[in-house]
Length: 171
Image (cartoon, rainbow, N blue to C red; front, top):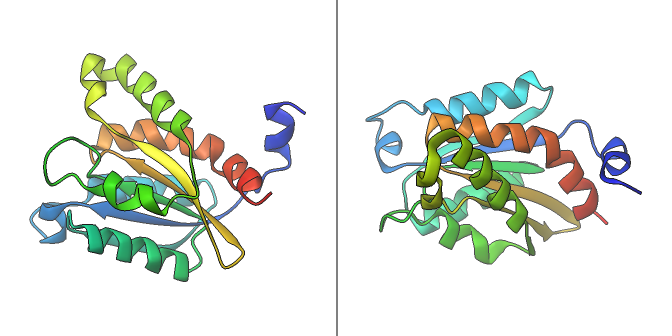
């Protein structure tokens, strides 16, 4: 069975969470444009928001938000921010150990599309995705850079593949 056949059998709607990782936005010093955009696009596509948080670039705050999203019933989580190489960028280090399976292809495709948009600066992102299994459930997590441009690039992939990821993750 090809990818398109699999996608036809994948969930069409899911419950989602958006977690923005940003010191400045968590202190109220800047608006969370990327998180707001992601929520708007996911809701426009018919998905149900069950959780939203803006947390600082701190490991325990990030992990805590992922746990809360799971407890609220999120099937798909999109994080925005903390995927670069600065010392405060700890989203990947916080979330990667939680993965049961990592989807390295997500980061590769994201960087390819980013390269087409911003050139070689695309190497600076460590965007990734994976699935977490717990209590008989699967939650897919997509970790994006914090810029609005990254949110626009990433949401295209997420809307196309999140249901497909859930389908296989549940097998």
